[in-house]
Length: 230
Image (cartoon, rainbow, N blue to C red; front, side, top):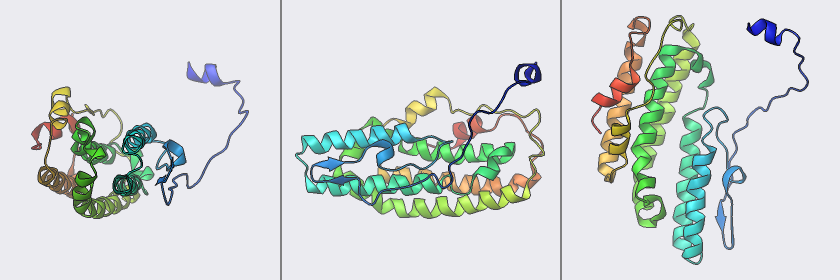
């Protein structure tokens, strides 16, 4: 069916963009701010741009209400630069591994786990509180180091694998709504750090065992989150 549909098709235009990720030295200044793609972009496939834009719009509106308060502006700048750095680390060199089923679903564990660990930040408007941001950034260096190290592990494994377990494999990729709701509840920073440490340790263990895993082995991502303590 598909060959018949596209047998007479012609390519009318094509092109590509290399090194699409970019950042900005400053996102906020007296009387101005950058929003969305004007601020930074990290990856077209994961496509987190709307998340970034809404986050930035929240902070721009807060700055307007605060009359351009310099303390808030400095905190928001640091928060956005942190988001750009982590967003880049999560995808840097990872495309080769996205074609391998087993490796990709371990990436889902890391990516979704990292996102869920921040979910209540927006639910509870913590990203608008300069004092909270300053406390959070003291934890952030550990997270950046972990994401960079795990990124190197994923990239090295991708170079060794041949997608040999792809055929016939499936997974329930999204955590249950009830679990996501639990992540939206208020969480203290030490609790976030403990969860991050458990998540990173679990991903390391899974990667250690990856060569011995059989084809598919049934659903994996959803049960993983159901058993990892929040």
